[in-house]
Image (cartoon, rainbow, N blue to C red; front, side, top):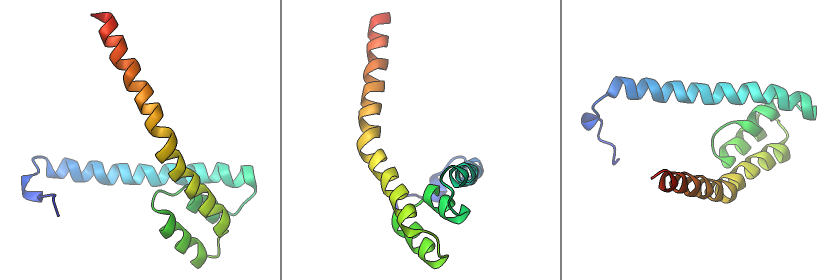
Length: 107
């Protein structure tokens, strides 16, 4: 409730960019799920739910309802969360240190 729509300066472009980025995210997940389905010889529904953006709990519930392989979906979603929590922060720290050091060296 902290977002005040009346204070947004470019409402239309913000909404369009939000919809476009969401669409591209789902489309990218769908495209990658075809490769995962072929590589691991699993159902396309299982591979899509494994790579779909969203929470692990939602993907698990959907996987259970559509009779997808729940262990594969949960495993991939758990790996995604662990990667975001444990691998991304050190990578970003390294990147920004390198970027700051290159600016200092150029001065």
